[in-house]
Amino acid sequence: MMVLLAAAALGAPAARAAEPPLKLVALGDSLTAGYRLPADAAFPAVLERALKAKGRAVEIANAGVSGDTTTGGLDRLDWSVPDGTDGVILELGANDMLRGTDPAVARKALETIVARLKERGIPVLLAGMLAAPNLGTDYRARFDAIYPDLAKAHGLVLYPFFLEGVTGNRAHTMEDGLHPNAKGVETVVAGILPTVETFLDRLKPRGNGGR
Image (cartoon, rainbow, N blue to C red; front, top):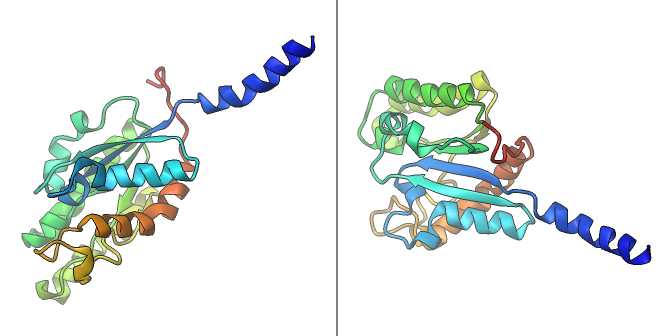
């Protein structure tokens, strides 16, 4: 009897440890893909390691495509976010802004992505972007409002500015002054980590039979 009880006691933590990890997809552009960085230094990989170091069981798929726009992300949404995904970190809009695309276009595409994921029961963490100063005050006001507006309208977890602590810091960017280097990615992850943990606390694993 004592052996059986001991086995049962030992088995309980093991069973908890064997629970399936939350499956996230990071849907984004080069900032997610890890432009000119090794795969293990890209944002999804670094974030996954940081979360695991805090005892979080997660797997984060890198669905970043360099040069992608919000409409590009919408076009590939269904195959970029497979069934069984527990949550999506949505990081798109920087390329729309750099091209001077009408903010209404980016807003509509992002809202459609959020709505389609909501229809599939997949929660979204929205990673915000800010317009460059040289685009003018009107453009900046219209573009910068996209992310808080969508987060409020759809009840999303919002990280206001994905490149917080990186933009303008040459030690954290590549030669182009735009893309994070390895140190910059670590800065991004350190900044967004508490928000991601808040997001994870809202999620429930779907498991293999979730859909």
